Length: 347
Image 1 (cartoon, one colour):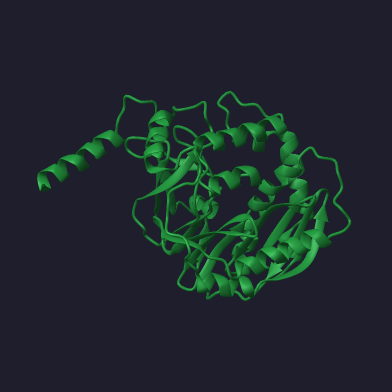
Image 2: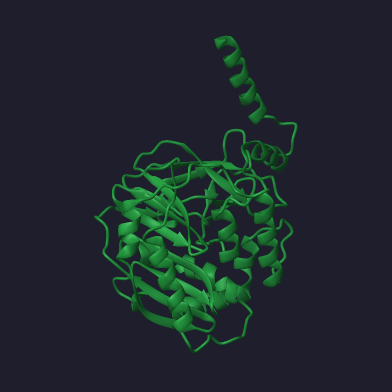
């Protein structure tokens, strides 16, 4: 019996490392087996779980002043900060050399290796774009890497369908982030095919073709860069001291509601989140609806629903646990650590 079990486990390991299939094909087969492929739904986890820490945090959030820029409307969100914790963002940790992100020894599409070699926690957000390796990737879940974490595997999707080559195993980051539609597909574990479809949709809308079908080509287009810089100047988080986050609407459509456990971390993460949300307004000349009432009411509904919502809790490769839920019809996720809501998002 034990020998048979060992043989079965060895067979699974050999199957996972199969080299006869193209990486994307091998991954699709693996996802089909695990239940996370293009059929939707992601991995099955027990539902009906709550999170008192998240409920308490969400219940304490209040909507503050609003600012507009073109089609973008931002509601600053305030609340009670969590207990202090030194946290470094992805770009900061990469710049200091504390965070190393590489392909695996035998590279596969859906997993990379991350390692925090520094002495503070590093926060990686679902939707962060990683550039390099054999193809650019996007992170699928929030991840809090503890100090001196050692190498850990992290889940990713591909956002550069036409490349599987490159000598450098290491990845960099330039502050690029998944736009709302792409981020939503990533967050709900919609499958690689739907992620590629969103990359293609945004590339066509921005008229930013790429020989490797790279999502980064959108951010590299000069006209896009110019519009995103304007959005950053018009919606600077320093205009809302003490804010823990923001709810952003493009017209009357929610582009994203993000919250962090303390204001300084929100201020550091805000520019890349805003740039990604502003992609939904790119090339659209419409002015915002002067009536902010419907958008404000929608944000209030989402926060009210989040304060009592049930969902699923699970661990990942980092510290803490991830709470996934649906609030008022929107997809949501929160990373919880030692009583803090490190980051929460509703899309």
